[in-house]
Image (cartoon, rainbow, N blue to C red):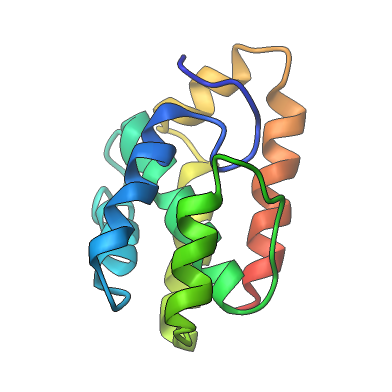
Length: 136
């Protein structure tokens, strides 16, 4: 697993996704990223889609004024949030909550990968904390 930290931007996939926000001025990318996870239903959820959805959920939390950890890895998202100052809808926040629930339930590759690590509890706590900052 290419992760170095338990937060949403502690992996290459999420960091790469964050740079894709730069050319957008609305929440279409955020919503489509979350919708990919929800579309899996009970099918196997691949880790990259889950990592991107957690990054998208982090965008929603930040837009709602509930900033998480700010690091060099979050700079693209932080700058975008400060520049756009968009207001996510309650529906989008509910979708983000549902996507997080889906990521935390099998079959989820990201869940499996973290459960095989010594940092599983810390990762789950980080994801739960993110969910609480979204406040649907």
